[in-house]
Amino acid sequence: MNEASVHLESASFRYPGGKAGIFDVTFDIAPGELVVCIGPSGCGKTTLLKLIAGFLRLDSGRVRLGGEDVTAATVRSRECGIVFQSYALFPHMAVWENVAYPLRVRGIALAERRRRAAAMLEMVGLGALRDRLPAELSGGQQQRVALARALVFEPRALLLDEPLSALDAATRVTMRDEIRRIQKQQNIASLLITHDQDEALSLADRIAVLRDGRLVQVATPQEIYDRPADAFVAGFVGRANLIDGVAVGADAVDTPLGRLVTPPHGAPTGAGVRLLVRPEKVQPVEAAGGENVFATRILQDRFFGANREIELGVGEGSIKIETAARGAIAHVRVPRDAVQFLPTH
Amino acid sequence: MIPRWTTTLYLVYLAVPIVLLVVGSFGDLWLNTLLPSGATLKWYAAVAADPSFRRAFGASLFVAVMTCLACVAIGLPLAYAVFRARSPRVRALARVLYQLPVALPALVLAFGFILVFSSDTLPWLGSIWLLIAGHVVLCLPYFLQTVVADMQRLGLRTLEDAAESLGSSGLQRYAHIVLPALRHSILSGLIIVAALSIGEFQFSNLISGFLNRTFPVVLLQAFYGATGFACAATVLLLALALTASITGALSARGAGRLPPAGAPA
Image (cartoon, rainbow over all chains, first blue to last red; front, side):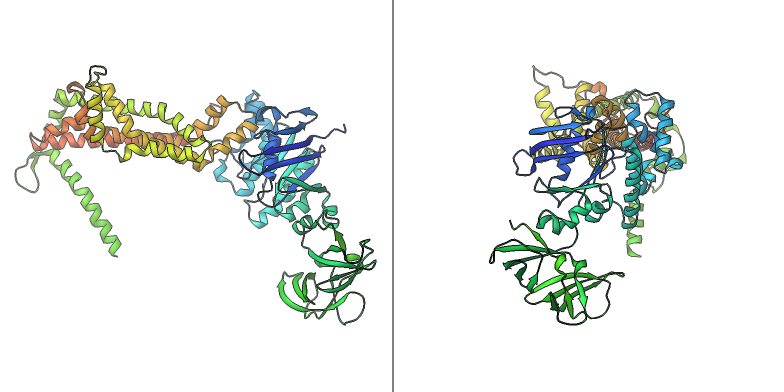
């Protein structure tokens, strides 16, 4: 079967009386694929999830789930498993009853409900806690219950709304791996909403970057990082030096740092160009001289153990670098092939 | 040190009248002395034998139970409607409206009732149902406040959204999620309502008919008679209100221990 599990086609929705919404969004999620939707707050990523789940209806466009057009279908009939930001566990039901609830409303017999809930809880590693109340569990455990409950009825898609934002840093990393493992094991089309770039880069099969309700780029994490579609994506996913300059000749640009030798840019001399240089590609060097070597002064120096993130003053501008080097940094080299061109709009 | 002394003094100040009431209710003779002399149960026997007190006791219980039932029947859908209202302006307005009776002196309400219900078109003054209707107006704000606050605390809306996405119908959501999740606040709301209704005097004194006077109304008459009798009757009122609260609290705790909805019986 080659059909997408989740399919959005020219999906548009505007909140009544406002400017916010989703505009002409088209993308697919293949069976077993995990797409992470990322963007700044207010960009419409939760709206996107609500539109797929059916809590909101599209103004125009279509939603398909497992090949079926559900554009006009109710929340119930869409059968999406949703993990809410607050987990939304039913406080008066034991853990296993929470997990068995989708089976209960489907009229499945008690013995079968118990068995399937127990199997699901075993899979998320909570077999021993099935008789507890949600309030007696830690945040990470509640998260696992929510995941088990969202998967137990074999939904057509799994939707996760900022599932890790309420957890402490250590639990977040563990749960990130857990979500990934369970999602792959269940082989279910999944959409995860986040505003955390590390989460997006480490979890996703593909990342969808959303800005002001529009999709800017949908691609694999590596492609998003290495070939961002524009300055917004470059700045939002990963750290970036965005440098504006003026093209000179075939392969040089005048920038506030000084004249940079670049790969051939194809722009006429005097045209404005925008450059991207990732901080980890900038190299500290011992001595002056050579291509793209600049004298620097340290503006800010943050130490993270393995790496330092340093902001350096260069010429009339500044550049961020990420390096394992210790000690003073008097010169840096910007390798020619570390310079990328971004559209200037 | 000073806060502890203030607390102690305040507690003594609170307890002394109640203690004196209890002592007085068992005292045989109490004339111009600090404490009565002799112990007796005769005042309790006298209250129990008094037909107007027996009737008032029954009336108070009936009114309290009916007020509780009406508060659930009216208050629960109302609380839900206020909570689910889409527009924040509608929610704020509804909140002001349902809190209004708290600011309204019961006396004003009673005069209003007398004006309206002594007319020929609505000649219901003196009926126990009118009395109950008034108690509902006075008690409902407290019930609503308790339940709406709990709905917000629980994030009931998200719980319902979750249930809906898991395949639950509107009726199932109400029966499986809304009611069971709110059971504690419904019960504690009802305890407040029962205690308020049983102790209510201002309104009941003006509205209740001669045959369905509530306990506090009849109690006022007792203070024109023997002190011991009045004390015994007051202690009974206290016991009635306490019983209502404790029963409520116990059943709330019991409900917490009951197997949750859907568990095998």
